[in-house]
Length: 369
Image (cartoon, rainbow, N blue to C red; front, side, top):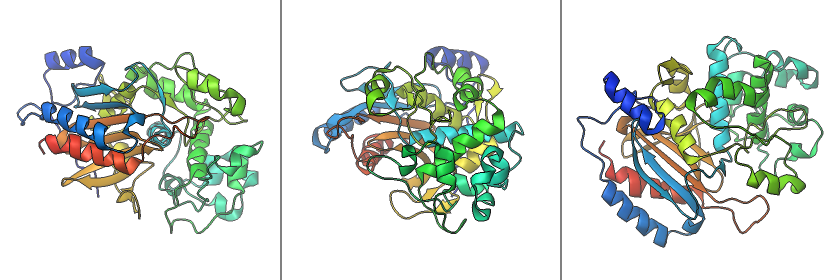
């Protein structure tokens, strides 16, 4: 199920106005279409805030088109606060993989793992070595889930990448298994392909061009003793003991930063006149590559896919209520962040399925298709 894209082009003067508004790309507009009913959104959002279990853990809801913020609500915080994106990190890493492919740093989606991670080839069984980049991106690489309550088991080792590579692997390309270890391997792929740290690569190709502030950065391995430093940091992206930034969680960004990433998807990878990532990659990444059972209908390349109100949507979903929802046919981006504490089990956010219902019924219901 591909994510369908309806495109609108702006005159230069309107593009400039859009850039002044939020540093946006100005590649789309809802001109000529019925306006979203923002007043109704506000009413329904207040209702959900009153009636929805654990909504008090929600910290931000931002609704935007490609050229304007429609609605922006913060609860007990402000727009400059950053939040642990949890598994939304996976979708950001996917975008970096696409950039590396665009630049020829990675040859193709069928490249095997021993070619993608040459420094770690000695830790691979023959079956693991043949695992392809496509299988990693679609969570079909045969690696175990790694969703233990205290974190994936590999974080207790001295070399996370090699521990993942040596973990039991099931049949490749046959079954979707949502795996944090698989996502961390993708971060290692970006590092070894680019010859740069994941953060440095992301800054030069994605974050800096989008105007996302990542300096200074906390990048240490987050253990029990560093949790407070991590939570206090304005920007953070932890690393494993070998220096690979976590590929499945841990990236801290502002809600408006996520809006920019959503707008990049709406704009087919173009931003302020520059092609940051190819539209072809984003089309594949945000389209269903494998059917799944459970929360959503399908999975792309580290993006969830579904259909809402007859429109295809792409979703980056993080534990506890971190969401980036892109609805191209409605020229819409919806972002939420919620409170999840690494050190306080009473602050574990809101269930994603509840918050997705809020997005569907309080936001999308009031945006014309």
